[in-house]
Length: 624
Image (cartoon, rainbow, N blue to C red; front, side):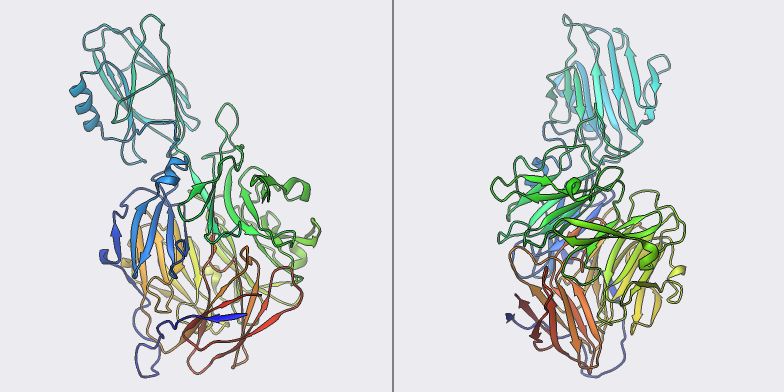
């Protein structure tokens, strides 16, 4: 079934059929945003974009990692209105919900302490989450006993200031002991941790007869224990899709472990699963564990119409979470299916052999391996040497956040999904493997991609609507990889003032203003909206696939009058290295050409269905 919606604005910005001209992108000014857009909160982990409120345009969710609460940007008439999401904050995605607020400047804390004439130990953290912890000791009247204090963090301390020799001991890189005599009336000291936002444990050694009061944060909340644990959680990968079959998309967020695997006595982590338009937390799911989540993706492994949540972990086992239809609880199917891979966090799902089943691609030392889905919960390994997905020796460890990702796109418009391996190895290189009838061919060198190194993030989209997928790469420079008819790549260095010298840590594509041109939203320590302003006479078509739940894995092929065939996979077209979000599938239509029809291979089917193509410049909804 096909349903055609109202026409979008056509892309022809001039009456003539002149060659492409003008700038590719223009940096949006403040008028494109509204609300209290965050400035300088720190490193963004990822961005997902989908129609959260079901009003027909694309909204944005920014994961600022553990450096700020998640930021939701609602698309209102082509302006992105920034808002906090209290439900996500209350669920403990960033700060532990049992801890009082801790963020304030040292100057504000000193003023508050003086106003209330407090005695005891007061603890706070700088408003910038990359800043320092502060401890304020007050014993003005001399009635308190000596302070014996232990500070512990799993990743170690740095920049301890304010304490004099003999007042502290660095027992280990992770433990500092502080001792202030009873005659010390006042002392302020500050310190940072080696990794931003790690857990801090503060423990006082005190007698029951002479207890030392402890207060926390700008509200000076009195602590109820001599041992305090301050968590700053670290949300990682996200999936913002319809898993449960309800009208609104759900949000699943996996959490990391900052460094290595979490182990007792550190606290287990708990991923979060939200549903409905108000981000309501599903209580009790999933259970806490010691995994270190990186990537989240929805997939139908069994081919039964029910979506599972594929959670790829770093240094811990992969999970495949199924939603129990009766209880709503999440159950891990990975061990029984042999999918509990360890340290296979660079992965993605796609149908390798077009048998209607979803296969798992993952990065290993030997190259990109494929676990082929045989059905009924059985998988077999297809080695990289057989498929042609062999890589040169390179370690995938990188400074900062690992952005290595596997992406699928039809580079040469031959009706097959080619494979991109992006931001790989210490040099952050990029590879393209062209899909052939029975495997892959490495096109990296012949396209000149081997020259594109030191890249931080890459987004894929048809930026000029010529029917060929391009890429925008952020790194030491911002470079457009312009796809020249599936035969070559033109590397176009864009103006540095687009994002300045900032390192882009997250990016996503979307059409904010509905003009049919794909825009880009990116984040470093702040948000950048890059308007697509390329002038040309090309057009487009957009398809939204409709089924319950989402038809993740559906393959849609557009047949052009010129003979080209462009394929898109629903569920892959707007994914990142860590996250998955859904938007309508976008097909560029070059001037003088048109799409004759669409052919869809729905998930778990072997027979394709054909649909007549609507008029150029429109959007349509397809259903089985």
